[in-house]
Length: 85
Image (cartoon, rainbow, N blue to C red; front, side, top):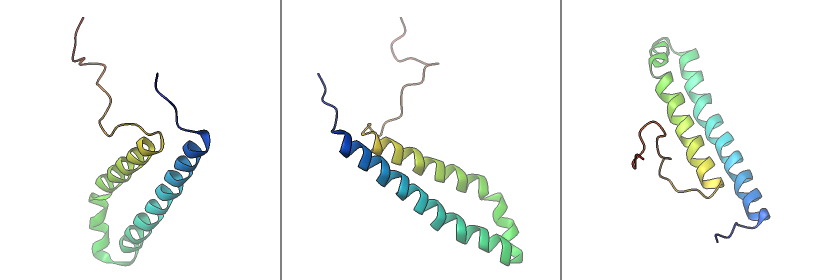
């Protein structure tokens, strides 16, 4: 039987993950948006914006896995099971 971590630890990990994620987003998005807004060549960064958002979402998912104490490996794909029955 697996033991669950104490609730206070779980809550504190979730709070730390949330605050870290918010800080990363603010610290990463603010300069990105300011460069796009202030410089003529910054408009070219709009081509990088989807990659930038994807990376931020990956960071968020990693923080969520850390907060829930889950392994870093992605879950198995339900469309392609490893052990077909």
